[in-house]
Image (tube, rainbow, N blue to C red):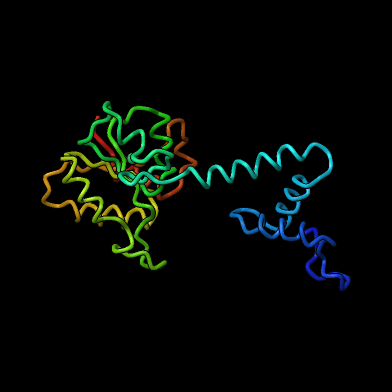
Length: 213
Ligand SMILES: [Zn+2]
């Protein structure tokens, strides 16, 4: 389904500009972009009209972000200051930690604003099939953090995928005997969701974690 054939009439199906080809190839290596979308973007960026502005702004933004963006060494959040704003805030409860898989997972919590504890980013999930084992994830740093901050409550907020379940179970065993209040996010029927259109896994989970009135 590519607009520009790789091999068509013998001319290679490439632009007669190695510079533009290089740009298309770099863009098509980005996640979610095929050659077709990469070509459209490249043409937009180098096109004649008013594209000098967006192109230069893009280059400047990427350069600055590459320079400034880092991960908080304490929680793993994406930040420019290390430790991050959440870890250094006096108003956050150090005894509560919410464990998430990726730094992006912190955003919905912060947007909603109800959680007043701190976070710990695992940076991945256990997945024996993909070769992600316990030694690949920062469990040592996590337990050290629990001891250091005197954490009393841990909330596990991982995906309800097989990998998320495996990791949640591992964490449950890891924390055994620590006297922690250990909870995980409830899963169930979304607010406003219709029972008739719910998938089986969600329905089973909602049934399994049903509660009394
Ligand atoms: Zn932090």
